[in-house]
Image 1 (cartoon, rainbow, N blue to C red):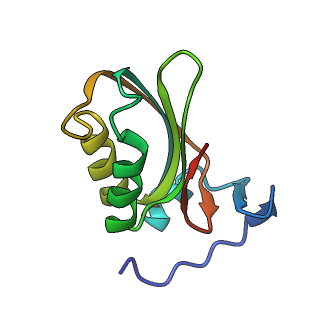
Image 2 (image 1 turned 45 degrees about the vertical axis):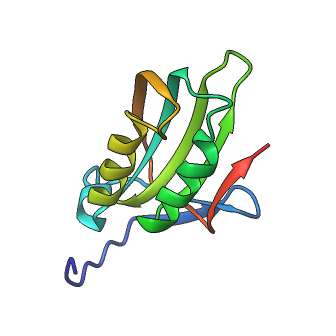
Length: 124
């Protein structure tokens, strides 16, 4: 899809049994060239008790997004997601509305170094 790219400065570091981190030293545009990105999301509003995480898992699987999502003690929902650029943006757009019973107030987005996960999971 993005052609053959050879980058000699890539190093993968296993952080846990589910998380593989892509570190890069010289090529600051590596995430763009790979066509993938990782984002950390904090979703606020009425987002707990409305099946937000369960529906997010369905949406993530539909868009081939990996990562995790969990409820936070401050009544927000936190997610860490990775996937192709366009698919990540579609997932974020869905998060701005959520499932039918949710009332999303805000979605804080911060893009991170590329991380690869085995799957998308709901953390309880």
